[in-house]
Image 1: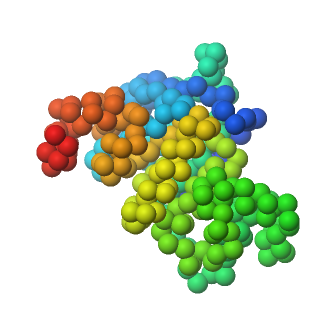
Image 2: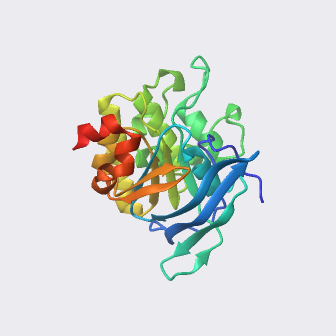
Length: 264
C-alpha cells in the first residue's frame, strides 16, 4: 500500500490522472469495506456508492467511523473489502484525484504569509520567499476565482475571517479540479454570510464540473438544504437515501432524538 499524506493536509492530491472540466469518474463503490486497528472494529462491512454530480452527506455520532471512512477512501489505512472507481462505461479507473477541505487550518496568525504565498507554494516547487512569478500569480488568481475569492489574493492569512479562510482552502482543494471533493465539517464557526457563500460556491462547482462531493457535517439545516444523498454511519451504514428518508428512519431517531423532534 502506498504511503499518502495525512488526511488533514488541504493541499493533498491523491493519484492524479488526466482531467477535463467534466470528470471521467461516474461513481466510487465501497464494497464490504471493514477496518480494524489493535483488535477494535472501526468500520464493519460498509457498502456505499458516491456518485458524481451528487453531494453525499455523511453523518453519525462521535466515534462512528467517519474519519476512518475518509482515510480508507484516501488509501491511507489498511482495509478489507474493495474500493472501486468506476467510469460511465462501467470500467474500473486506476485512481482518482481528490480535493480536501478540513474543518480548520491551524497556523500562527502572526506569520507574514499572504494567500498568494500559500496557494503558490502548492502550485510550484520554487520557494515563495524567492518571489512568485507572473504565471504562478495568474494560476493563483484562477484558483481563487473558482471559490469566488479573487479579492483575497494579497491578504495576509492572519487577517482572514473564518469564512474567507475556508474559501481559500476550497480554492486549493479545487486546483486542479478533483474527481472527489471531501468537505470535513468545513463551515464550523463560520458566520452566516460566509456559510451561504461557501455552500453556494460548492453547489455551483458540483453542477459545473460534475464532481462527487462527500460532506461530513452535523449542521442539519445545511444537510437538508444541500445534500442529494445522506448516509447515517455508526461503524456500518445504518440508513441511507434522501435527507428526508434518513431523517425519518428509526435508527436516526434513536441516534439523534432531539434532532428528530426538530425535523418532523
